[in-house]
Image (cartoon, rainbow, N blue to C red):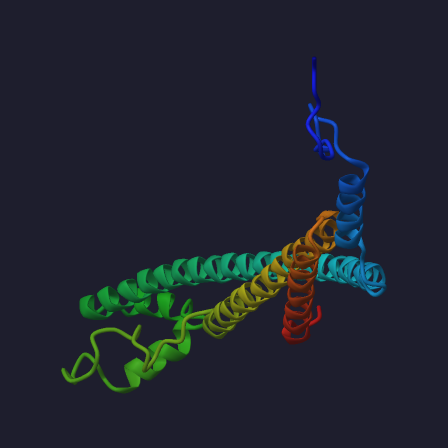
Length: 240
C-alpha cells in the first residue's frame, strides 16, 4: 500500500530556464537602461549651440587662414622681386665701375707717358661718377704726393651708381620677407584653430551616442573646453 508523506510539497519557480528570462527581470533591465539613457533637458540644446558656434568659428578661421596665406605669398613674391632688382642694379653698377676703371687706367698711362693729347682725350670722357672722383683725386696731386690713394675708386672719392637704390631695395626686400614670415605664422595659427574646432564638432556630435551618462557628460565637457580654448586663441590672433 502506497503512502504519501504529510506536509506541503516544495516546489521551486526558476527565474530563467534555458535562456528564458522572467518578465520581472526584463522590466528591471529595461528600467535601468531607460534611466541610463535618459538625458538631461539641457544636453541637446547645449550640444546644438556648441556645434553651431564651432561651425561659424571654423568658417571664420578658414577665411582668415586663406587671407593670411595670400598675403604671405604676395609679400614673399615682392621680396624676391626687390632682391632681384637690387642684384640687377648691383651688376650694372659694377659694370659701369669697370668701364670707369679702364678710362682711369688710360689717364694714368697717358700722364706717366707725358702724352697730353691722349690725357686730354680721356679726360673729356670722365663723366658721371668718375668725373667728380677723378677731379677730387687729382686735386691732391697723387703723382707727387705719395700719401694720396693709388686710385680714386675709394669711398672717399667714388660713389658707385645706384648705391642708394641698391641699399633701399635690399632693406625693402628684407622687410617684405620678415612681414611674409609673420603673415605665414598668423595663417598657421588660424589653420591650427580650424583643426581644434573640427575636434569640437567631432566630440560634441558623438557625445549623445554614448550610453553612459558620465561618458556623455565628460565628452561634451571636453568639447566645451576645446571650444573655449579656440575662442581665446582666436582673440589673440590678428585679423587680416
